[in-house]
Each structure stands twice: as structure tokens, then as C-alpha cells.
Length: 352
Image 1 (cartoon, helix red, strand yellow):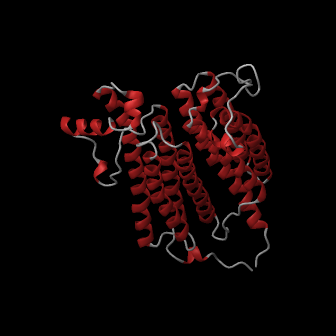
Image 2: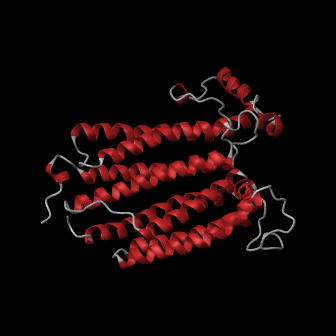
Image 3: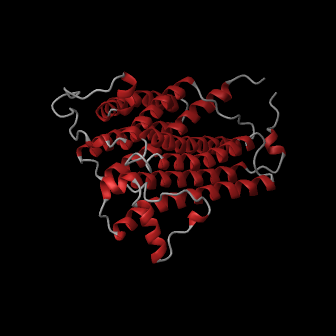
């Protein structure tokens, strides 16, 4: 016989905590959009120092603006690419990097302060405190990863490392996925005090691994400016894979560092990933959630369409930003479908 959940033998409020997590997840989606604009406008190296506390305030007078501009003039991006930029032009790129960093701080506060309040009031269901603490810690690490990424472009390079950019983006999306999964667990717990946490099944793992690989190559494509290499579809120029492409010494180097190879992989891995996601969507429909399944299928189709449009418009910023934003929404839908399937599997397991 099942016993009442320990979570409901306390003051726990899973519905309240769930709503808060969904709100923070929404903020992260906005952060992904701002980060995409920052990258596409080449604004990410405009702030050359990491000041977690004092950096909250922007330059407030002409002298402070000039000091920031002078610091930017010392890095390779300025000396090799943007020499002659005016102060007004610098302010334009500074805006996006500053907005990106400030919004990151806001997300940290929006997560940490309510978490402390809910813990003090004992509103967090038993067994979920460690998850939320781990997500908070990962958010703190994300700030350090952001600076680690920026630092790669301040001395020898004119841009940030595409590998570090990928780590930064995938960490943000992992936090997003963790928030949504936990919020769905808590929503289920609110509806049914006997609901066990969902389990991540085989089909969900296959779909998520495929999606993360595609997101990884999306980050490589952005970091290497590989989207500019060929703007035709489905061929790359006159070939499926361009003849005479300069190749690096090893297969791994080509898969990670060669812009043409990276664009090629990103193009066609999309369809392999889509197959796994459609498989998961079908399982979600069978598990009783046609909305989750249809959300995945519709967003997969939209994502591929936006990817093609991004190439064919020469990486027009509005289209490219929409492509990145939709990637975050697709991840949310995938987590939703995986949770539906995993929750049904957990419920059907015999009680111990």
C-alpha cells in the first residue's frame, strides 16, 4: 500500500515553488535571446573586466566612458578589426554586453532570494532542496564560465573561443532544462501527493542527447561565424560538401574547428536530431499528452525552417535570433515530452 508523500506532511507548497521555477525559466529564455544578440552584434568583448559587484553600474560620466573605451582599445578586436571606432559606436556594443551581464545578475537574484525565503518557510517539498541548491550552484558557475569565455578573446584572439562559447550556452540550457523538469515534478506533486518524480527513459535520453549535439554544433557555428560560409540550401555552393575545402590535420580538429565542416554537420545533424525528437513526441502522445507531442513536432519544424532561413538571409540578425530563441523553446518542449513519458513510467512501476 502506498503511503502519503512525505512532502505533504510538512508546510510544502509545490505549486508555488513550481510557478517560481517556470518564471525563472522564462527569464533564462530571454537571457538566451540577449546573449544571441550580443554575439551577433559582436558586442561580447566590449567590457574587458569582470566585476561581479561594482560592474552592476554602467559608466555614469564622460570620464568613465572614456576609461572603458580606452580599455577596449587595448584588445586585439579593436586594434585588428574596429580601429577607428567612435565612442558612440563603442556605446552601442557596450549596451548589449552590459545588458547581458546585468540580466544574468537579475536571474541570479530572482533564483537565490526566493529560494532562501521558501527554504526558511519550509515551502520546498522534501527531497527537492538538493536539486534547487545544485541549480543555484550551477548558475554561479555559469557566471564564471561567462568570464572564462570572454577572457579567451582579450589577448591573442579577435573573438571568443567557440568551444568556450558552446560550454557557456549549453550550461545555460542545462540550467533551463533542470528548472523545467523540477517545476513539472512539483506541479505533478501538487496535483497528486502520491506522484513520484519522473524518470528519464531511454527514448528521452536518445532525443535529448541528439538535441544537445545539435545545440553544440549551433554554438560552434555561431562562434566560428560558420553560418556565413555558404548561404545556399540544400547545396553548399554547387556541391553537397564543397570540393577543395581546406582540411585540418585530424578528423576531430575538422569536426570542431573547421567552419565549413561545422556548418555541414550542423545542417544534416538537424534531421537526425529531428527523427529522435519525433520518436519522443510519439511516445508522449501515447502516454496521454498530445499537446506535449505536438509542441515538439511543431517546434522541430519551425527550428529547421529558421535554420535554413538564417543561412539564406546571410545570417540576418532577427532571423538568427529567432532561430536561437526557438532552440530554447524546443528544449523546453522536449523536456516536457520527456517528463510526460518518464512520469507515466514511474507511476506504472510497482510500488516497493
